[in-house]
Amino acid sequence: MLCAGCFWVAMSPLIDPSYACTRRCLKPSIGDMKTILCFGDSNTWGFDPVATSSSPYPMRHAPDVRWTGVLASELGQEYRVIEEGQNGRTTLHEDPIMGHRNGRVYLPPCLESHKPIDLVVLMLGTNDLKTMFNLPAGEIAAGVGILAKLILQSESGPKAAAPKLLIVCPPVVLDTPHLPDLAEKFVNAAPKSKRFPSYYQAVAALLGCAFLNAQDHVSTSPLDGLHLEAPEHAKLGKAMAVVVKRALT
Image (cartoon, rainbow, N blue to C red; front, side, top):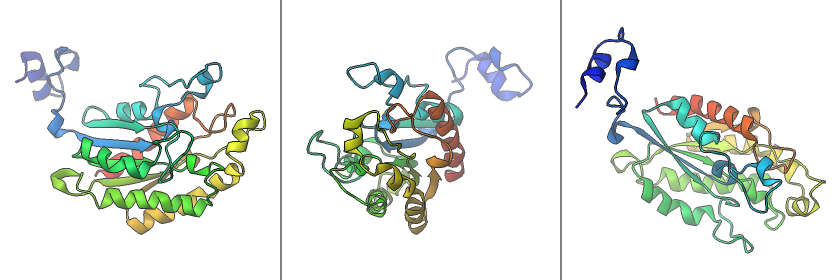
């Protein structure tokens, strides 16, 4: 039930919205909101390359700085954005060092947990570039395609249908000669990542889902060649918002 202030704000666009109460009576109910699940790796988790460069452990951007937070802000109160990012997550490969990073294993229970989901934003593939996996760009995109099919064949959308899907091509990886240990883990990753867009777009076209090439909008930090600094998160979140709105209309 609306209070008197919110009632008159809702009834007339001529009334100053400041008359509405602080209880946010006009906020949509959960049932009326569109749910967006963002499934990705450390760039979805919000890994901060600047803060981490002087820290013994990974540091994270603040919630409103991360692209998922920017996306939520751009979309407004009618949308609910869920972050499901994990450092080191791959599409469908087991990392024997880090463990529990296989996206294909975690995705089905993740979908089940958050349903009903209107749209899944899928951005993975950077960690598949690791030397230990020795994968060409095309096979990494094929791994994304397998995850995409799991989503599109699921019953995790509204009314037990499949959710809509937005496939996002990850940013270009940079060479890091100043970090020799990291460079050894990502041998030839930079040129492979530059070949991602055509493969990812082909997967999206084949499956009939939305596509965004993050490489057109953001660049990774020269500090580690992998992660996004705060201004890039802002750019990506705003670019995502445009495509998400289009995909859900």
